[in-house]
Length: 85
Image 1 (tube, rainbow, N blue to C red):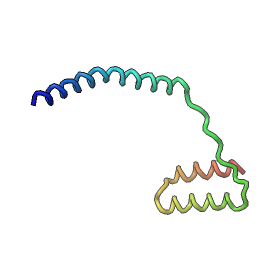
Image 2 (cartoon, rainbow, N blue to C red):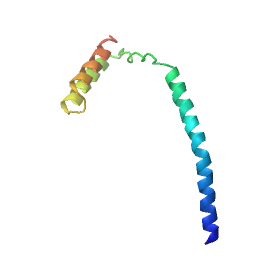
Image 3 (spheres, rainbow, N blue to C red):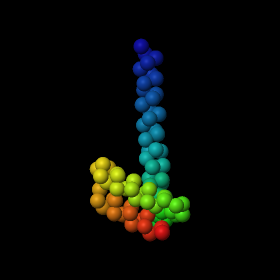
Image 4 (cartoon, one colour):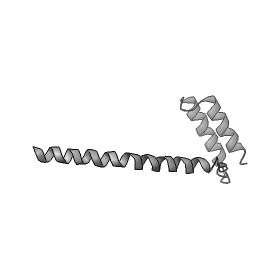
């Protein structure tokens, strides 16, 4: 019974020591991510294959009709697709 109590105490000590380290690492990762700033998004994939643009627009219409995307999302996606023509 004493062996379990000792190992539990040791685990608590190790975890207590790790909390500040994990917190510091998280802060550094967040700071590095924020310091990079917003990166421009890549342009939409070119629609150089015949019929691909129409297929994508039809798919957007289907997603919208099924309630999977909102009016705004549909409009933004259509604008991105049509901007690649």
